[in-house]
Length: 287
Image (tube, rainbow, N blue to C red; front, side):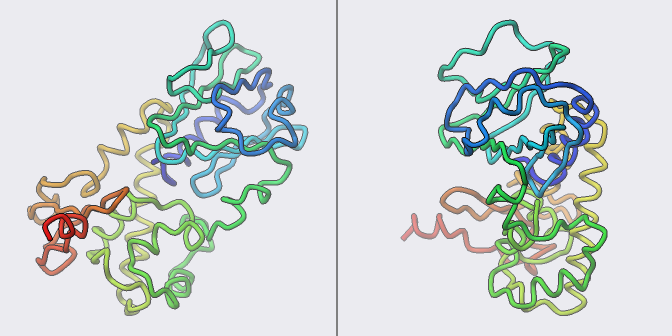
């Protein structure tokens, strides 16, 4: 799933390639992608793009007529830029193509979604707050006003484990499964540690890990073409998706805990005092 660093990089890329250009066609292929109907999707056609914004993991393309084209790429969605779009309208079918946006230059982008769980979303709204996923967003962890005291206040009343708290978009915007693993590894904390139990020193460590991990990921992605962002994300991850590999810090074997629809990765030596965490799904299977 694209998270804050990749969506920030997409925002920068689209700012360079869209601003000042006219959107001449918005062509839906998968109707399920459309989450709003008034204004209609076609109302964005004829808009000149004046800015591109990011709200957590959502992209917001602002037109000069006051409308916003907002998309959430969800778990399996992606944006593919093309300097020259194919001639003719896209054909509905079983492929991953969900929607195409064409500019007056002949360039544009496709939104695609792999897999069977269709959660890619597109909204045409007058105000970003009309999008439920934006209206309930917590603060952006890279915003200038997001300091250590703000993080302490957010976690102070949280009875959840750190992994779940970091992924909650209504608590902190933009962090998902991959970067929550990376942040907790950098902070040397168990993903199962209760958020409200952190000492001031632990809050400081978590804050530094949060800001540093995300800032470095944004810097690695800066200036990359949209098509290279996925591979850059994978290459920069130290523990997430690296089950069975050695930890780059201590050399211990990276372990995994599986859930029904996701998994987390961690280093026992760095994060849990050398003790492996119980893999709940495997425990149920072995009973």
